[in-house]
Length: 141
Image (cartoon, rainbow, N blue to C red; front, side):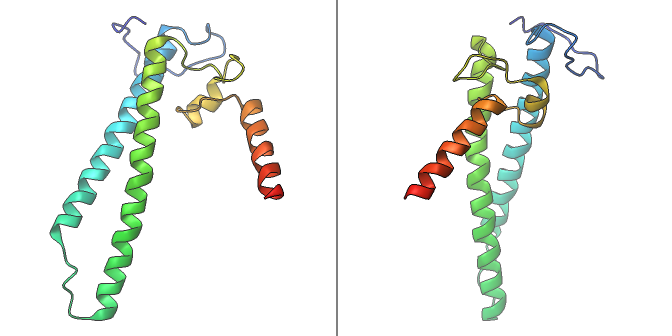
């Protein structure tokens, strides 16, 4: 991919273009990088909050509420960490030319799906197959 692609500010991928052309790849690369930057910023805010402490509240109810809030925030950050890993994987797929294609079938994932879930690795059909298989397995266990 040519990294010198400059996107117009109002650019949106369209089905009228060649699928995963340089403009579309750059669009999704920028979208992924922006998302990653936002998640990292939120994580830094969480670290700052945790460093502030505050668990030495004299009131047990206040302390319990604060501990519960911190635990929820840490679980949220753990999900963000996993999402950052998926974003990094998607950025690698952009570089190696496999981004936007289903890892099972090789078919295009589709612009609409990628717009909503830019880290998607499966087409909707393959994802639905996976979910049906998981449900069948869960029902058997």
